[in-house]
Length: 483
Length: 96
Image 1 (cartoon, rainbow over the protein chains, first blue to last red):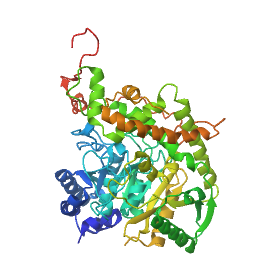
Image 2 (cartoon, rainbow over the protein chains, first blue to last red):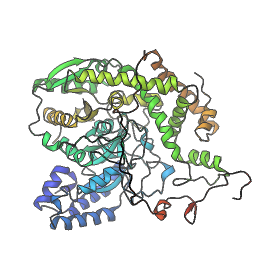
Image 3 (spheres, rainbow over the protein chains, first blue to last red):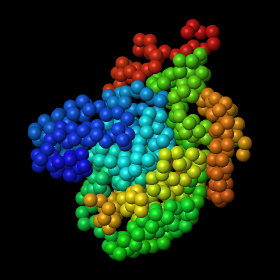
Image 4 (cartoon, rainbow over the protein chains, first blue to last red):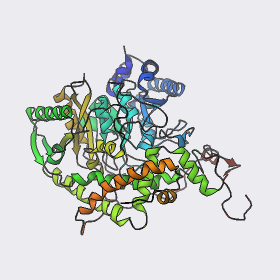
């Protein structure tokens, strides 16, 4: 039995029935990584001994009845390399953090461990989550498991490639402007970006603090519901997580159907030029299938969509430039050997440690925040962001969920998007919902004629994850992509 | 829009090579040119949105809790002396 092919739910059932142990499950994943990851490159590091020791402890705890409190005992989860797991590296795929070892667990990790999950393996990403192809990783190349001449998407490209290539049971990613959803679409897996505040950011290296969210990347929607349920909730270490109770997302999926679901079609998204014809075909077919299964299609308008990219490329770099000021060569991370004084300690350590895209965004962010420009850029962008949010509020007064393309193209070839601005356009459909702070998913919808996966995006209102997952689950049956 | 990349990089405490400056200059000008688009939106009377969800102060009890031991906190230090991070001289004329 190829245990590495299992998802969270099927692994949980097998462990409960005693069909296999957690040690066998983790060993199967490790063997798969040895056999296949040389080709894919999803992982940066994998502490095999640590994972097996945790699996052994989980098996013992299960025999002692521990699964009553920790239902996912001994199920391994791959972790994007910007989420701190005590005693493991956390490089953000940057040279500036090479050799860094986390002194503590992020809240999502401690929540996951409480539920029984075992963090196993660190997966690749664009440096500091800045990018849409994982080509900006300073530490390794990750290839799309469906076609290794193509990128896995990004920035959570390692997470998506690990899930899509059956190199893990499930993974955690992060999404700031589409970094869970676009790679999920490229690699044929499910990805959920929770509403802003639903999941704690404590212990997750900050990129853009008003946008960042951690979310599940999984083989099925049900797995996403299970993993999200385990990590979500209020955290006193993150003041942006409200006290709203976390619903039982898995139960919310029962009887999921498209019947009577009001699906909004944002006309501005469907009018965008430059959409790949195969992506358009798969998306159109997905929409027709939803209608055939009883969904009511409603055209909606999000009139400020055309400004979302511009708003994002002011707000995200501005917040990044402030967040990344902490990498100064003083307390951790790379310190330049050529530093002569404190000023050159900063400038040279940062010059040697950061890659080109990170430098570009730090400069962009510093520029828009600099004296005389703040009001025209950052201040104004925050006001336009309010208008974008209002567009979503108005749409959700009429519909239950939006259905849109996830990315304008399928996975592209390495080096295909050399110009930064062209690369940024990958997040055209995912950025507006990030700015609005609402929740969104990417669910496999079909394949291009060349066999590349294509996902569609569903978007629901803030803290409406139960509804989002239910619609996504219903779509899974409608699309019929998953085995 | 002309950007003084060298000046902004200095504000960001980032040393750039001449080659990097030459590459970044047109790229940044093209990105800034693109984001200028927001100047055409009427934002009169619109409140800025600072977060994904309206914020209220999130207080918690002010209690002493275990924190990282000094040895752990210093575990990733590039250079240290005893329980302190070692840095180049900061104050002019001070002993380093």
